[in-house]
Length: 591
Image 1 (cartoon, rainbow, N blue to C red):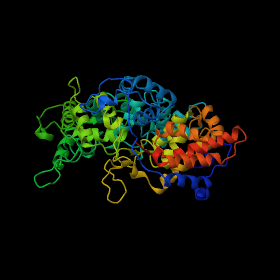
Image 2 (cartoon, rainbow, N blue to C red; image 1 turned 30 degrees about the horizontal axis):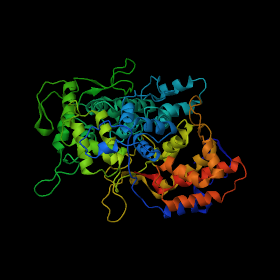
Image 3 (spheres, rainbow, N blue to C red; image 1 turned 45 degrees about the vertical axis):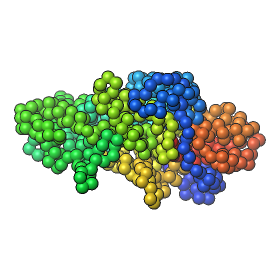
Image 4 (cartoon, one colour; image 1 turned 180 degrees about the vertical axis):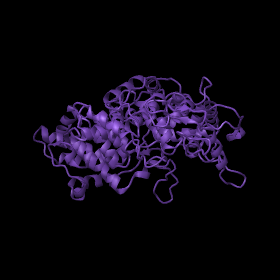
């Protein structure tokens, strides 16, 4: 990190990446990791008897018993951006089912709109951006322009602030998962931060609605129109990019799936493709004719992002088309009618439920759900208790209240992605952030939100565990390089051992406040008087109680070896213990 960019206020010397191998702290990280055994989490129970939405025969018993603090922590790593004191207490009070229902029924919060909500320019008008920013009385001109238009930082920063502080945690977790399925990225020349913020707010608003509606709104969003070339698509030469990704990534997937998420094969044992190049061409024809909202300043050919795209029938192909599953569209239909038909066609395809459900489980719960788990949730996607297909509230409820979410099997778990590492630290310890430092950390760890390298996200859901002979999937390991894992420890170190991380001078003055952790006074007291009990508390609150005895003993021994003469030294003891817990494999691989 470029320390000159911001003020970092320390009471202790803080090593950085170049000297990390000579850093005494590193020896203790290696010791803790060396004795790690990746064990299953054990039970996950609940304080009420409300039913789940699947036919999972084991879940009723799991919902019947009280929830321990450790079980609450493990569940909150699946259903939020990290546990807090309040969320742990609320979950234990309500039980799993009522807690999930409460979260599912919270309204969507709004991403911060500072300088992003009232800009009226459009993506090709840098002059409009410059004029807008020069009118801001307290802002430094170039940083305002970077925030609104030139750099991909702003949507990530405001998202990370929301992920730490906003109440609609489960909705936001689902929206973040959807942003990595229905990918658009600022990793291209027309970054336009205010447009990305609008797209991500749309996902947040509709994350718990119906998947068909999400697909339709995504298809009409102008940022997606620019990203995958469906905006201004003309009947004379239809661009096929959006049609291809709508099939390959946003709905059916490439190959035909069974309802349990496994591949269906033909008599020869070969995979069966869901679509052909001709199918892509036909869908592209059906989705021609969409242009930008007719802003009187710019017309319909300049990309404005504040409104959905609108149909222009002069550009639409009105001839007959052939969709998937043998569905025919007669000639003479409007652009809106054809788009609705395409969305219905892919939404109702048999591969769409297992393709989407399995990825949602991977993002929220485990990288390797059993086929039975996938099928239970797919049944809910196909038809909830009211007979509705694609109801996301029912789907997410079924995912989180399944026995494999509440009582993880031996091969369950997932590597925490960088975003979850950083938000989880601030939430589990307690603190404040404007998202700036977390954005910087996530970028260094190869996962700046909404800046995926391509439409294929940061990593593939099919990425395999990098271990010889393993058949397990481990998607997040796709960005777990030597460099990115070292950066995890570096940014952990900076956040934990800094008294405060000051405002970032490259962010707008009216927005940035910096980041800090607020260490509980009870933990500081334990660091001085009862370090072994402190490690037990941190093990429960940070990992859900999964550190093995040898790890706890090593951390406790090291904490006891540190000076303990005053409050500052006790705080240093606490920080060291927390750093070693956060650096452990059990924290990085949640079950």
